[in-house]
Structures are given as C-alpha cells and as structure tokens.
Length: 432
Ligand code: HAX
Image 1 (tube, protein in one colour):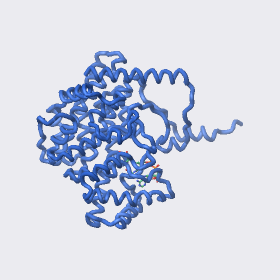
Image 2 (tube, helix red, strand yellow):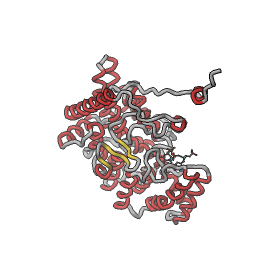
Image 3 (spheres, helix red, strand yellow):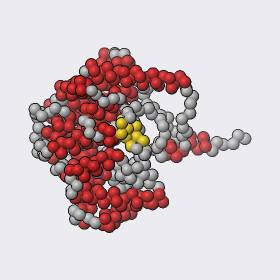
Image 4 (cartoon, helix red, strand yellow):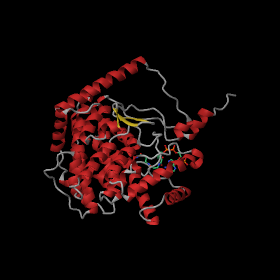
C-alpha cells in the first residue's frame, strides 16, 4: 500500500504546515464567542474542531475537498475513502492498489460469526454491527504497536492499517448480520464477484443480487453517507474516543452507537416505519391531504417528523436530491417513493410555521428517502437501514482519525461547568 501511504503522508504534512502557520501567525485570534444559548443548546454552531476530510455548507451541503455531491455521486466507496483521506481522487494505479489491499483483508474471522450468532434474535442489527466490530478489537495493529512503544509520528500509519483491515470486512460483516437476523442465519461465503466493497455487499446480502440497479443503489448508499464533517454525533464520538488513543475498532464501534439514535442515523428506519404507518392507515397511494393530516397528527402528539430538519443544513439535503434522482430513474412508480414525494410536498410548509417557526430547517435530510429505495429492492427489514448507513460512515471515521493522529491532535476534553458556576459568572455578587 505504498501509494496510499505516500499520499496520506503528503496530505498530513501539508495540513500540518498550514496549521503551524495559522498557530504561529494568529495564536490569540478569536473566531467566535460562546453564549449561554450555545452551552445549553447542544453546542450548536460553536466552531471547536478542525476536520479536513469534509465540510458541510449550510446552503450547499456536503463537500469532500472541493467536490460537491453531483461531482462524486457516481464514484465507488473505495474512491471516496481515498478522497477523504488523501484529499484527491485516486488515479487508476492508486485505485487498483487500494482495491487489492481491501480484498486481501476482507475475510471476517470465524469467531465473529460465533459471537454474533449467540446473540438473541431480538437484538437490533446496529447493536450486532457494533458488537461485530468490537469483537475484532483484539486484532488491532495499532494497539499491538502502541504496546511495543512506537513513536507518535507512526500513530497514523497503524490507524490507517487498522482502518483498511476494518473497512475491508464491513460489507461481509453487515450482510452476514442481515442473514443471521432475517434469513435463517445462513451467511454467504466469498465469491468470484467480490471485486469491490459495493458488489461484495450486494452479493452477500443474497437477494436481488443479479439486479444491476440494486447493485448501483448499494454503491450510491455507500458513497452518500460516507462523512459529514466532524461535529455530528457519530463522527464526533468516534473522534473523541480515538483521541484517547483507543484504537479504530473501539472508535468506530462508539461512533456507530451514536449513529444508532433516532435523531441521527436511525432516522432512516424511523422514516420507513412512518411511511408504512401512513400506508397502513390510508392504503399504498395516500392523497396529499391524507399525508398532511397524518403529519399534523404526528406533530400534535409531540413527535418529530423523521427525515426533516438538520443541525447544520438550511436547504434540502443534496444527498436527498441525489437519491431522488436515482429513484426517478429506477423506481419512480414505487408507492414508497411516491409517499416520500407527497411528504416533501407538505412537510416543509408545515414545519416553517410549526412552534412559531422554531424549526431551524424545514427541509428533508438524507434519511427522508434512503430507506424507501432499499424497500423497493426487497430490503423490507427496515431495522437494517442504519447498518447500511454505518458501513459508509465508518469510511469517514477512519479517514478523520487517521488524519487526526497524523496531526498529533490532543485528547479532546472540553470544560463543563455547573449551574452555580454559570450563576456566579453571570450574576456575580457585588463586592460589599
Ligand atoms: N419535526 C418536528 N420538530 C422538529 C423537527 C422535525 N423534523 N426538527 C426540529 N424540530 C424541533 C426540535 O425538536 C426543537 O424543538 P424543541 O425546542 O421544542 O425541542 C426545535 O424544532 C428546534 O430544533 P432545531 O434547531 O431545528 O433542530 P436541532 O438542530 O436541535 O436538531 C435534528 C436537528 C435533526 C435532530 C431535528 O431536526 C430532528 O429531530 N429531526 C428529525 C429526526 C431526523 O430526521 N434526524 C436525522 C438528521 C440527519 C442525520 O443526522 N442523519 O443521520
């Protein structure tokens, strides 16, 4: 993997030079202030991390380097990982090297299946996914090298080594979990067609495997969810954990546990269930008025509308738009996609005025549509959708942490304060 190592090294060195200049030239520059609203509001909007793998513009969405979604939506997950970690797309030789490296490392150890098969069948697939990754933690090269006493300058190399070992196994691990939980436990072994991450996933899931548009949806799924800068719950969690030099297996598993929450990655599962509930009530082709009625009732019950809103975005998520383009090309008549469109027609207007206009972003995010496409291709067990998201998001965790280790970023440890501290700070007792 000389080519990848050389490119990542070059990237880390150039980022380090930039940061050194920034630090030396502006050591005391103030780039923001911290208000009570920030502290009590989930630190929303506070600029407190550096992340160079990707950037989310509130009005344009995800950027990886200078590429927007339409620029990279046709790529493969391998190309995207290379882009995230090196800052540029691979040339033919670099891509071939990466694919060979991943292919060599793709075998999921037998003990992982034994562990996962012993879990109760009622367990959520995200929990099994996280457990499967944790189970392999003993194989961490970083951990072994750290115990041997490697210098700090080498941390990123072994973080990258672990990352490749982990990423290579994710499609087989995820597909195996689908089959353990939903298809009588028969895990599909490797095949000739395992040329890349997306086709491995399609083949090993075992249904609809000869349908090229399902294969393309899996590829797109693994591309669009890859990274969303550093402050979202899952990436941030993985960064915090890895900043303690916990290895990438521990960090990825921790990040995925955050992704498993309904306000984050689980929203794709919740969205599909939401649409199913609409169909259960009104049939598969509800009218716009019926969809509006259902949305209003959901809000009246004090619940959120899944798939709408975002902590950073202030427009329709370009990942939603990309999936919609796919849906229009491949399954425009799907009842689920049709209901997604009706929701898109009614929800933003409702949310704009809901709670006196308190909802910062009334537009759909990626989770509003992604599950409906998987459902169309026969992935009816919607509990699995967040695992699909997770395979992709681990690419981002791995890239972010490899670079953070290369830049010798310190352990993340913000300061918390008590109510009393705040009261004393804001309303100090007058000096008598
Ligand atoms: N439906 C109803 N109310 C909503 C809402 C929605 N879709 N989105 C935001 N609100 C409400 C919030 O609950 C909050 O109300 P309270 O002050 O009474 O608690 C108010 O509007 C202000 O929130 P906000 O500033 O607009 O949003 P946040 O940054 O706090 O939260 C969330 C962003 C994504 C968590 C939020 O919009 C939400 O809960 N959406 C629905 C769940 C969802 O789709 N999650 C996936 C997001 C994308 C992602 O991470 N994917 O993995």
